[in-house]
Image (cartoon, rainbow, N blue to C red; front, side, top):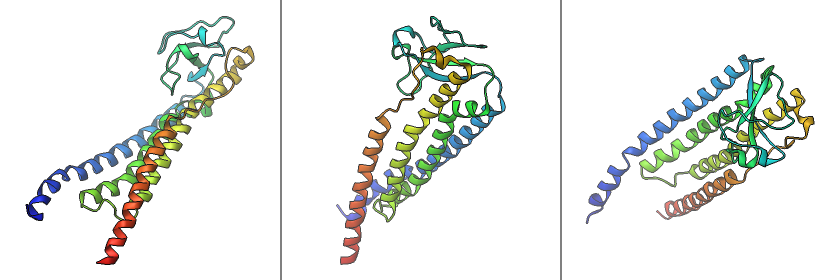
Length: 228
């Protein structure tokens, strides 16, 4: 089979890659705009009710998730209520004591942090899309190890790590602020610390391994070019 014949399937299979790169960029821009708009909209609602995740010190008390109201002995939320946890990290059910506190009289900071996961996630999606687009275009052009691709993939790895760790923290901090403002932190019913989960760091490590492979490919490509 001639080289020309072998290149036809590859060229055909790569046609969708530029489209994917464009769609990814559109998704990133849309996600960033949505995150910013959603966060700003929340800030304009202060001092209305704010909802944020909290964790019970006694997990067995929690039950349910979503909008199901939960009664905790000895805990009465002023102008508000407790409900099942929204899906935030591993706190997606009452088994681990994760609940949502809803309280009136919110501050702009509470509202911003309460929706901060969407804001940080949207911006992170845009950063990742911008970094990956040149990589995908170079792959479509038949030059996967083009200079800079390893660095761009490393940026994606760093973005995954930062967003994966920081985004879930923002609503948790909002929950701590609400507990302090309402005095619920003095009841002893809630955990006073925030949690960090390792899963995003593991994903980031895998992406960084891909970046390392691309860096080796770039070095080999430079060596080959030097021999030509």
